[in-house]
Length: 270
Image (cartoon, rainbow, N blue to C red; front, top):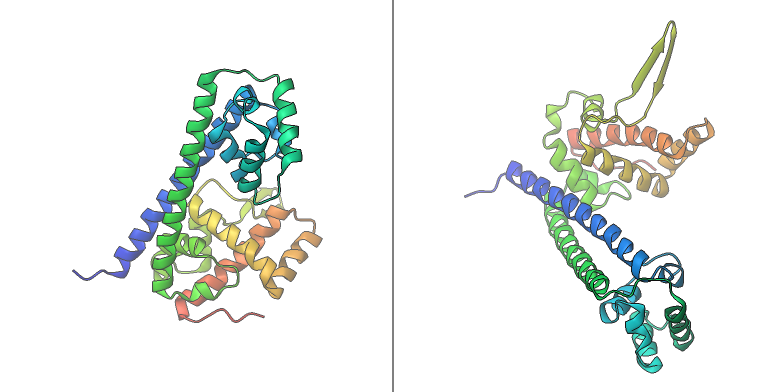
C-alpha cells in the first residue's frame, strides 16, 4: 500500500515521542547512578571535575564499581584503563591520585551498591544507544521529506521532525498566531485598570514537545543568522532575560516557518 504524507508524519511523531520517553528514562537513571555514587564513592565527583557521566568514569566503574575494588588493582593496570578510556588524558599520575582517594574515602563499601552502579551504567548506555538509533531514523525520514524548514540555519532533523509532525498540515492553521497558541507560546496579557502588559512567558498549555523544538531552534538560529541575532540582542537590551528574549525570537521564527511551509519556499533572510 502507498505510504501517505500523513502516515510518514505520524511515524515521525511516534519516533519523537519514543525519543522523549527514553530521554526521560535515561535522565532518571543518571540521577539514580549519581545517588549510588554519593553513597559508595562521593570523592569521585571532584576527581572527574564534577562530571561523572564520562566514558572514563563509566569504564572505570564498570570494571571496579567500589573504592575497595579499585584499591586492589595494580597501578599499571589502573593506569592502562584510565589512559585508554580517556584517550590519553589520564595517566599514571591520575591513577595514583585515584588510589589515594580510595584509601581515604568515606563511602560505604557494600557489594550491593557496586552492583547497582554497574547496572545503572549498563542501562544508561543502552538508553544512549537507543536514542542514537531513533535520531538516525528520524533524520532519514526528515531528509526524505525535503521540507523547506530544513533550510533554516541551525534547524536540526530532530527539531524539524517535532515541528513537522506536530503541525502536520500548515493549512489547518489560519495564521502564525494559531501555531504559537498550539505550542503554548502565545503572549499572555495581564490587565489592571487601564494598564495592559504583554509578556512572552511560556504557558503550560499546548504541545510541550513543539514548544521545546521552537525554543531550541530559535536559540540556534540566533547564533547562526545575523537578522535573528540582532533581534535577540535587541530584546536583551530592552531588559528581557535570556529565555524571555528567546520567546520573542521563537515568535519571529514561527512566522518564518509559517511562510516557508505555506509557500514552499526556502529561508532567505541574511
